[in-house]
Image (cartoon, rainbow, N blue to C red):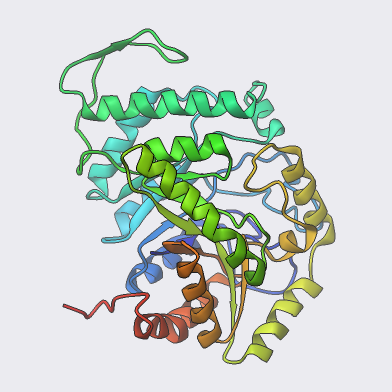
Length: 363
């Protein structure tokens, strides 16, 4: 699988002041999505976040401005034809009820022709929950609540009669959802790395969005990923299910390794130090196992992995990730529009030659 992580927030994934086109606006992201679809990519989705004035700080007010993932995906359904559209949703924030998302999701699934999916997240940052007048539940309780929420959605999507439940957390009396989703139920995604998160993903998710447990450099990641991905697959098998894992590399690619390194270094040399430190501090304040240990240098470039080099080297790295148990990559770039174009021109054909992708022209 190859997906694109849309930059629906200012600064994208990289708090740097090096000039670029990357923009949070819908028009920019719609153009990116249409280009991703032309190139044969499988899916797009964006993050969901709630930040106060100033975002994560620095001269760029990193991620202060963002458009909502669910609303963005809804609009993208009208301007695309094939690509899978995933909404990231904090299901425990505010007034969400399983009946809401079951109805809204089934509706959007029909509008998109069966191309909608949900990335279910629980929210690990205390200040986000506080914006909704809530106190963040502890890690274990969040996953208990998410399990119930998702189970109720799945029951509503499958039910042929009215559904009545007394709880816990969400009650329903004579609830029913039509139309039903196009293919039984939409694709469900979960971003996780903790035991509770893996148990949730094994029970509910089709795609597990993972991070490297051993750092953002490829040489370290390929050592830590095999046991990590094996653990996720084993948990799913025990639940009688199969899941796919996908990881998020920041791709810095140029015709030669030297040029790619120079590009990376220019991005880092222009780092918005205040934003980098602010983002790192907020992440450390959360309790998400998958994200809390990222070092300052990681935050300056962004993405869970740094994949830097020539097109041939990028493909070699992707082969290593596949061997380490990753079923796909969810791409991020620094300058999204031109970098995606170059990826399509220089990297995708090599991926096809290596057997990582099937050509759109293949029978």
